[in-house]
Image (cartoon, rainbow, N blue to C red; front, side):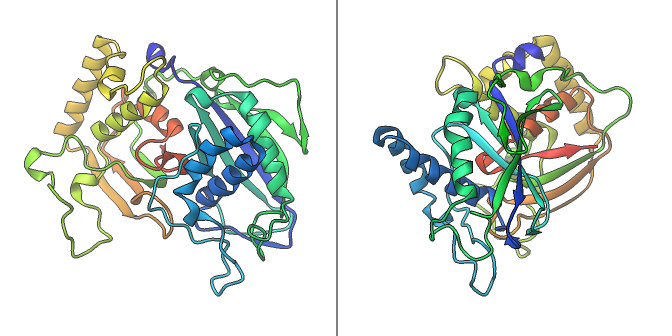
Length: 349
């Protein structure tokens, strides 16, 4: 599998903010507002030509601008997920699940991933960290509303992933000027080998996902147009994630990383997997499909104001051991739509 993942340039940062205000209400979808506020602040720091591409990307998400949290809802923002949010560089903003009301001294953890050509520690140091410092003490009345996050936190720490370990980049607010994160260290020590000690059975989506119709849905079961359902909270059968569907979504995600080519197709990525590995994997997937692997699921609509369509958990008879490394990679990279806002990741157990 190493030949398959070697083109992946990725730097993962774990960021710890500590609230310094008396009370802060986080928006329903923190990643959407975080994308807009950080992006806007970065654009303001750039010369005109470079700022233009940031403003162009942010223009489609001006509905994500923070709203007045003094309104009846007492929330920082109501974000519409109608359009795909993006930055000019490929990035993922993934706030860790937690409560939405934070008091003084409480920590807010989120992960920033820089991917592909954007996986550059210099980009983090020159653009993103200064923007974070600015919004930590922001006084812009458009952003600093009653009880929202902006202007009410300190940057406590920043870590960079090296395999399964997190190495300090910022400690107690102090930047280590000698530290340099490389775009390949994320994989150090990760063997991505099939697990043989015990079968995994559970897949829990910790952010909403939208993978569309599964590729292994029978042709006559694929809708030509969205079907009307009496119960809109029930996921259509053809959208319940399958092993083949998740694997296909991973191949589509991998096209972002392929060097030296534009408009790479998922099948070109899949072709990089050794033929004997492809054969062994597909045999396991076919056997799992024959045994009807999905035992039960609890999938419901994504929370209000989040992008993505569904969230919840799935339980299988057993997850094929050869598939596990690909699932672990998919959980790191995020798959499906709205990956910039953290959608499409899960945990296995």
